Image (cartoon, rainbow, N blue to C red; front, side, top):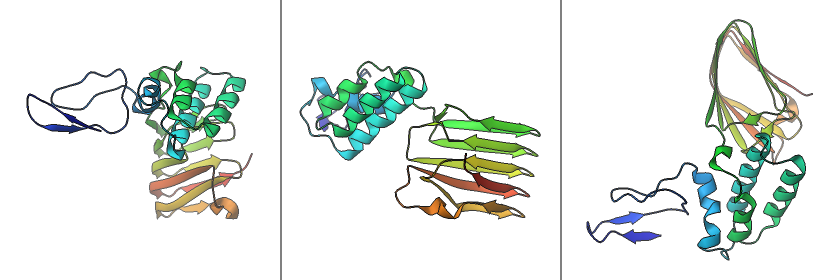
Length: 218
């Protein structure tokens, strides 16, 4: 969409749909949650516009985050996800997240910074898009068994010295360790971790020094 600013004569390109943000003369609309804004504003704009696969995936991600935060019950989450996957229009998708606030947005980064001991994240936790591991002499465990997955790809950026990174996941999770710099270190991943069509892809980057990465199944 192209908007002409009559006073300055300049043009402003606005991509997607925005809600609730002020319009600035020198910049685009703003919103606290672009993910929600791109779907929640549609009933009043173009509710009959056909939804794409990307639109459906974005709404499903938002719903799963809301479920992980306790804003939706398990039954509500399952019902809404099913409706989102079969939705044909933008209006149908927008209705599924209309009662969810911007607080449901996934935190961008989870930072693990520790020297010595153990650090574990397990149970029903919401997985961010990126995780940073900055540890020394520490064992770090990420258990994805009951985690709320909000994105198909999660990047774990490591700076680990003399430690171990344990990843617990079910079949359908792919771990890509090609981006790791191994210094007197090693990885122990399952042979079926390269399955096609993964439900979650974990990309490991950064540096391991005198450390290891181990994949386990529950």
